[in-house]
Length: 260
Image 1 (cartoon, rainbow, N blue to C red):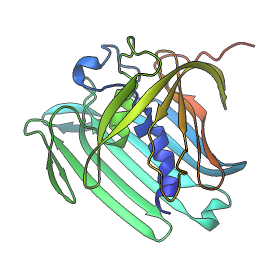
Image 2 (image 1 turned 30 degrees about the vertical axis):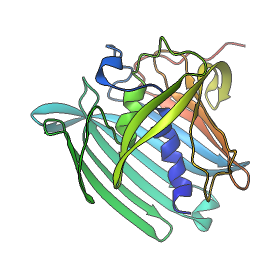
Image 3 (image 1 turned 135 degrees about the horizontal axis):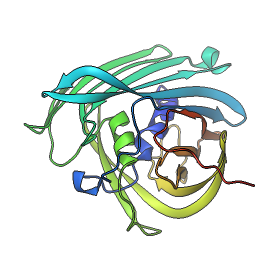
């Protein structure tokens, strides 16, 4: 049950990964800048369930002698869900402003009676990840939740066709995992900030206590230079979950809703 509201941050970060990711696939022009702040709300049916705020900030900290950007995400339950299953989670990722690869990641999760913390160091010289549960060797590019979201916004998907299956790798608690995402084409989608031209994706999900066997997760990302996820929807065992973009400020590029 503790993973129910972690679903929000998974939507906002991990599931935004939508292309085969390596350094060569990244656009030269970075899609965001320090000062960006975006807010998402999660609804369970018609009920507001949770909210996540993600900020990009400058930081005086340096890693491996290099400057870094600080990404800070906070997710919490709201309204009735504070009484049913209170959640207050916080995530921090420090990334290279040029390569967008992570240096350091921390998370503090309090989900009802469950508590979890983790500190993760990405050693790019030795290709190892050092976390609370051990040391993990890796090859290629591997991300945490937040850095994977921001890297994915910068991936060049010019050659992606409808039906193509793409992949991204991420580290979570005790190992390196991969997620497969299918590109479904373009649609106009409405969120809290208006209607936008979007790219539509369907990340693979694993059936279990939350998802039905045939559940489909759909994710819509702005078809512009920002590449911000604005909406996501998935059916669960009982009802459905919807993520909605409700606020965006400090963007590098202006949002351009469709004029009706």
